[in-house]
Image (cartoon, rainbow, N blue to C red; front, side, top):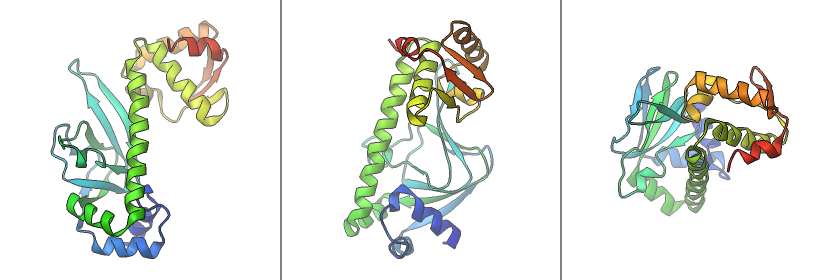
Length: 226
């Protein structure tokens, strides 16, 4: 494995609290392969059989789900060091529940299930890190469920803004994505998102300019979640 890829793997949550030597020793024993994907290429389709854990070494991918209506919801964008397949790999129904597509040209390290189990047995820290990753994913999915269970676009926008406000510890938040990406995130269309943002501004809930949103009435915004 190239040194720059080894450094990325070492910085991933899977190798947290491990020395570089430990990471390198593990990587030399892993039965793995590095796959290359072009920009826009689908790495895995929803329903494909999951046989390996994936670690992104280079580039970015999107995890998306599609609805019968034809709408698509972008769940998350992932980059170097991020991991996918960690939960579904050990599920009785080990098929991908989402589609994974390259936003850019991408290099992905794939580690098969048998090798993962052997590494967990010999490296307790590796096992602990894996369980921590599963816990984080569970919390993320729980948040996504809460978002998608909201019945109105305004409620979904409020959910996103309140979450960002808490993360950034400010009533003025910087959106980490474009409006197009935000629309996909809350499973709506860009024009519908823009209209609702304008209405919320008119109603005195928020003010915004480009990718910066100022929450003017936090309590009223929170009421939109119920």
